Every structure is written in C-alpha cells, then in structure tokens.
Length: 526
Image (cartoon, rainbow, N blue to C red; front, side, top):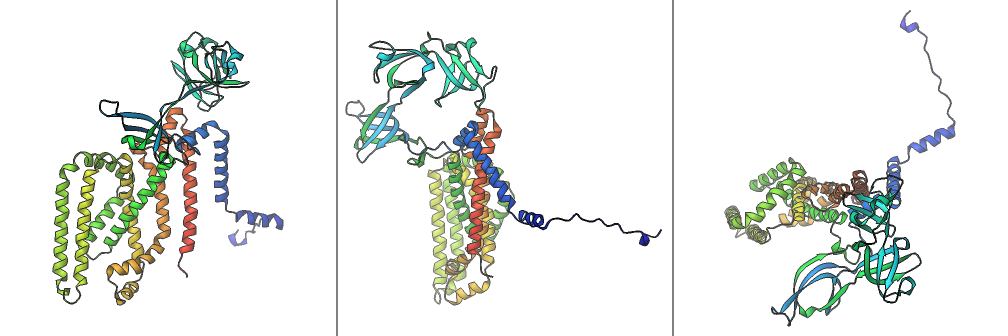
C-alpha cells in the first residue's frame, strides 16, 4: 500500500469550557516568580517568629540590635588624681552616660539571678526565713534545681536555657546527675531546644548558695542581686586621655556599636562601591585617553584585574599586600615617592615640550595640563606619605581595598562604554562653544554618560553586595562569617545559612526593584 493511500488518523481534542480556558490564560499571565519568592519569604519570616533556632540565628547575624541601651562603650580613661603618686589613675568600665561636663562609667557589672519558686527551698535573712525577708534586705538563698531546655552538654557541664530566657552553664560537680529528668526521656542536647531537662542541685555545694540582696519577690519567682553595679561619675575636665574605647551594645541610640553581621556587610559594600566608582571613573577616562602611557597602563589594569578571580584578589590583599604594607613599605616609601616625582617630572617635560608653541597664542593650553600634572604628582606623594604613617591597615580596610580594586576594573569598562556611547558631535559642540577637554567632560559628556551607565551601575552594586560575602576568607565579622560561627557553635548549618540566604535575597530583590525603577525614570526617550 502506498503511503499516500494510508488513512489519516485524527485525534479529537476534548472540548474545554470557555470559562476554564479564560481562567488558565489569566493564571499563566501571573508573575509566578514574584509569588514564589513572596511565599518563600513568608515561610522564612514564619520560621523566624516561631522557631527558636532560626530566631537566634537571625539575632546573631544581625548583631542582636535593640531599641535603646545605656551601655554605650567599653572604655579606659586616664583620669587626673592628686592623691596618686603619678598624679593620674585609670578608670575601666562601661560608659553609661554623659553630659556637657561629666561622664558616668559603670566600673562593676551587676550580677542577678532570677529564680522560679521551684528552684529554691528557703530564703534566710537577718529577721528569719521566707515571708520575713523584705525587698532590699540581704538574703542567702539555697538553690536546689534548674529547669529549662538543654542546649549543650559535655563531660563537665550542662548549658541550659531557662524559662526566663537566660542561658547558664551548670557544672556537673554541683548537680545530682543520676536524678536528672529529661523530656522526652533520654533526649539529647539540641540547639533547637527540643530537650527539656530538670537538674537537681546539691544544696551543700557553695556554688548553689546565693548571697545577695533581694530585689524582687512575687508569687512565682524571686530576683537576687549577688553583685551590685558600681558607677563612677568623672568630670570631663579631669579625663586626661582615652586609652581605650570600643562600642559595646548595638542599639538605635548607639549605632556606632552596630559594626558586625549585616551592618558590617552593608558598610563594607557601600565603602567598597564608592572606592570602585572612583577607581573605575579614573581608569575609564584613562582608557579613552590619547596618551599612550595612560592608555596602556589602564588597559593593563583592566585586563589583569578582570582575569583574576575576586577571591584570589582578596587573598592577595589580605595575606600578602597588607602584611607587606605593615612590615616593609615604611622603609621603602621614600623610594616610591621619588619614583612618583620622577614620573611627574617626565610628564611635565612632555607637556611643556609638546605645548610650548601655544604659550603666546593660547597660554591655557600649556598652563592647565602643566598644573594638572603638578597637582596629581603632589597628591600622589601626599597619598604615599599618608600610607606610610597609616600602613597598618585593619582587616576590614583590607577587604574594602580588595573589593574596590577588583570591581574598579569592571566599572572602568562600564564608564568607558558609557562615555564612548555619547556621539562625537557632543564633544565637538562643546569645543565650538569654547570649552576645553575638562570642561566638556564635566558639563557635557559625563552627565549624559552617567544617565546611560546608571542602570548597569546598580547591577554592579548588587553584584558587589553578594561578592562581599567572599571577605569571609579574611575572618571579618560580616554576615557570612557570623553565620559560620553560629553554625559551628550549634552544629546546625542549615538554619544558619538559610538565614543569611534570606537576608541576602531580601536586600538584592529590593535593590533590583530600585534599579528597575531608576532605569525606567532615567531611560532616554525613543
């Protein structure tokens, strides 16, 4: 039988109701990527609210910020003291407040124990026992038990989170270990707090007898202050020197202490991006320069830095360049300054030689580039001198330097492309109006170029935010490093890394939305 004579088999499609087809079409047009991301974030926020381990991970990687604090910084002051043989003494403690004339320092921290009624047997005071002890009297309390969730256990101690939210370490030497009670029976320590434990303490152990002042007493608990706080008010006129100052507790009224976790990530990203923009703009202008030295130097910088992984750049800066700056650079700084002066002199000679004929007709054609070379040389020497006196860069500055240098190469190509996208007629029109090269760049070319590069510049900022996690290799306490520490402490990496993944996603999605809005608002009319 010929293939042309074979019967054609047709399959009849089942009729679809028009309403269902319309519903399916509308369903397909929904932005499912937004819906899925939103559902994922909603699930993550639910976990942060309901799951203790996720909540602790979130607090840890965000530096545990609070609304207000009165513990601003750990300080050490050298204070004038006429009674001392040296005429001065040191005051160490926590800065808790200051005004125009005085500074208050807490030189001794308060130690407080919150005991539920089931954790002690008797209160002994000067008058008698139990009901006779009033608030503010000195008491002695025998602690007989501790209850809560078991977070950690080793050969010598239990780590328990009490129902009051306190995390305390209990030495096994003071515990009647065989009588401990666990719920569920036989459960093990868990960072999630799934194992509840009741420890019976030995009443004859000195560590289980609390001597202090009764500060609170209710039907279900007492509060005993075993060590009172001590405050010292210093006159600012008597403070001769601040020997040590370290921000203490992250709060809205103490933002200088918010320097770890997500705050460190955002801070390093902003500073690194500013540095990368400066480097990128300078190198981008050098890439379009007709000067062969500037062009070749900038091209070499771009090609080399774009060809090296960012992690390798950070390793070089953090573990090679930064130690070299600290140990070797101060001894050779003068040689580098002489090199800069020599290069500047050569450039100045080149400018004078090539533009000397313009001196009588257009003196600005000689004076302006000559002054530019002199100022650039002076600034280079001043920078090298500043680097000599500040050669011991911190680890954080090493991370900023590495990210700025690495991303500067990418931004240089971005700026170069943006400048070259502006038609030559714009530059020629600026020159016809009497503008020189610098003026035409400042007032005509660069404003239009920035409008072109602004959206991709936002994308590079997002990329820098994500790549800032690479500085974890330098052990900087940014968000990823904090997550690593939390995962190591709790032996629960899933919750730690899911937490920072959600935080990075929130930041990048928000920035992506802002970049789209910016791109729409700055788009050139078609």
